[in-house]
Image (cartoon, rainbow, N blue to C red; front, side, top):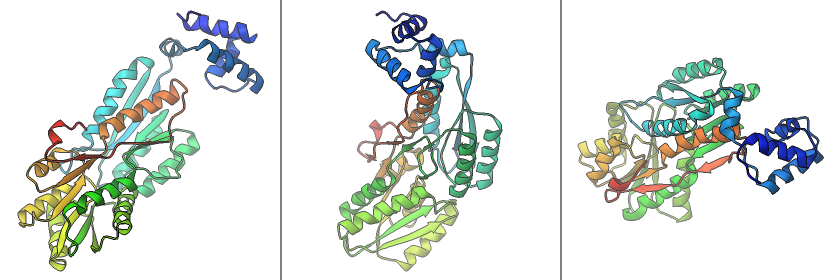
Length: 352
């Protein structure tokens, strides 16, 4: 059967199922009011005819605008990491704009819970159909999720996940395995008589992201019976002077540190400290393909960068809303990104 237009296809399905076109439309759009027996008969015919609805025609006919809000950290002087997911979001937006989908952008200060909360308030006032965000603050995100669930607004997490909040999807790294890989990389030239330093640099040091990464990191040392002592430091002030002050203290107390692992993209701050204090013999691994980090990777201060394709995360996040809000297709609850290893030798060929 030819399927040159949606109307003809729906009429043919209705004729074969001996129902009205309105009943077929209810089944196609997962609406109530159709018995299970009738729904099964219609779905069998749809499958038999390999029917593909003309989504563009349907959306144009409805004239309904679907609004998706994104809530991401601002690009800052500390890191340009969030440029990448925003590029992916813009790429997806350009592809689905013709279907009546618009994206509203909201940005918060990564060092300010108040900024996050204020933007959440603005989004909830905007009457949106879906929200894509990075859950940077745990308690504030839990309150936000509860409000969304009450209003039946689907939301998707990227880059970091907080389980059990009933998000539509999580798109990002498998945090535990990412930390495990980091530990494996760090031991490639680690001497048994040296200590390993884990560094969390964030206002929100109890972020689920960092905790799961550290759990994976420590598990590798436990599984492989690595004899090295692991020292942890949490640094809540993210400017270089504060980071340098804390690291000076910890290196003074632990003169036998042979390697350091930074749980986020601020690894360049640690690299700067190691270079300035003439400690470049210390192995250093951290996260994210941002220009601040690449310079230290090129100069051999950073050994490896672990990357999770943030541009692709942003793209997939918006397209997941397209799937569920436009095509009524199911969305994968957990969509894990590859764990990429970037080195001095391959960074020129890497795309975020």
